[in-house]
Length: 247
Image 1 (tube, rainbow, N blue to C red):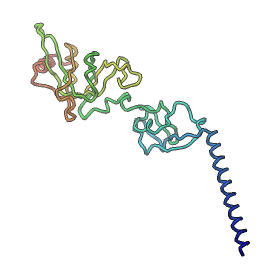
Image 2 (image 1 turned 90 degrees about the vertical axis):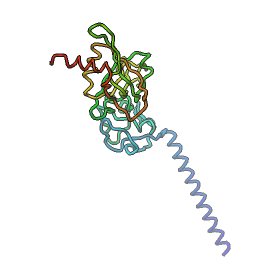
Image 3 (image 1 turned 120 degrees about the horizontal axis):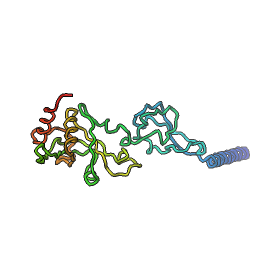
Image 4 (image 1 turned 60 degrees about the vertical axis):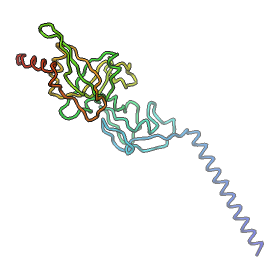
């Protein structure tokens, strides 16, 4: 009986040893194949993604492929994809990798400032010099001051618009100063103003000079642009506009 048990134990030991060797060979083979294939994890689109869509976790499927089969100029890491937007003129089909040219940061979208407008507002671009632009930041509230000469050649200055929100800063090339290809030097400031005030702003630019200054409540997110009706410059421009012949 003892001999029989010894035989069984030897057989079991041999089977376990053989299984261990086989498993080791499988793992070694798998590791060798993976090293030769140079497998990497990347992400593909889980569904068709429409233009101007923010990429979220639900849009991604993780896959493992050989590096040799990956196209050039694609995003591999999740953190480089999530939070970006699909190009305004492109759609990403389900199963596609995420090419660098397909995605843009929110602030680099051509119509990004327009997307920040509230009901009844329009975007108005004001040229700004280097010294002035350096003190203005996107999201900040600014006051729009106007200086001009009256018909009797006497100067007049004042505040036309209060607490206008800066929704974009662009360089000479028309690129957002946050764009990697931008010079980073502000040339135009885009501000959100009431559509009713555009004519007065345009008139002010045609007869005088507009300058932007940080508002005393520059970071009050509850404020939006409002015309300063009691200011003498506003009254002067309104009277000038009303006296102009109708087109």
